[in-house]
Image 1: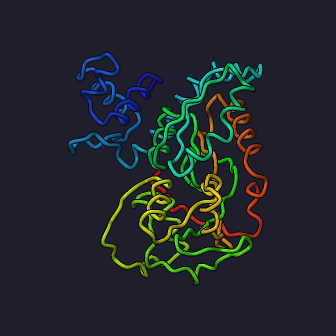
Image 2: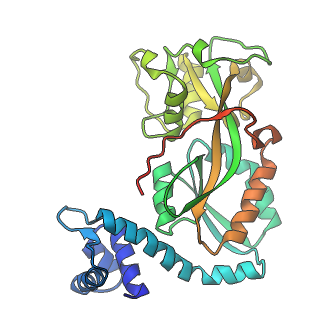
Length: 312
């Protein structure tokens, strides 16, 4: 077994096709098939299920590929590790950020961070949580900012801040010091993000969505801004994460009230070995510094489970 064979196997997992993987690796399909078969024979397990249309790892194969990925990525990150020894702040950080955070969080830290480190570049991609996790595992992203906690092999989490939940209703004005209990919230006309979004799952965790009535207008979206606009134009209500509320105008703030006792944890996730630990450290510190101080600690509030399945 050699590192090149591991790279071949990782490429096959990524593309799910011998033809596509062979083309990406500039080799013939029979040559790739032979290399994968030799690797499987050497380790004594079948890495891939070839009975389906798309080539997918077997259960044991996935476990092996997770460990192989850590080994391959560690070798590839030696150059970045050399930079870290000299504390050279240069290079590229490729990040995935969930849509309920990205447009509200990035403007808070990006300008000051890039001014301080002019030789460092950041690539930000808005993605759903599962996409971010997969691309971090495959080495296509250096890290991600999602709602945590998350429990996946080879993934480490750096908590960043904690967002309270706010109830936003178009026809109700709240006092500045007023807070709401979940049991007192009217859920009959609540606008929500589409299914599959972890923020929707968190709302489902703190509220009983069974109380909701069937709406005449079903509006599927993955944007918090869209929810706010729908409440403003169509009526009803929604639940917002705290960072979102910082961009509301004075009139909108009157229709907003915090929900007691619940927060969502926002964290930076990355592989355990990246070679870019020094860059990740200065980035996460910069984010924390630019977050409003009350959001840096959760206090006595309960962290809502983002319901991220443990797929690997």
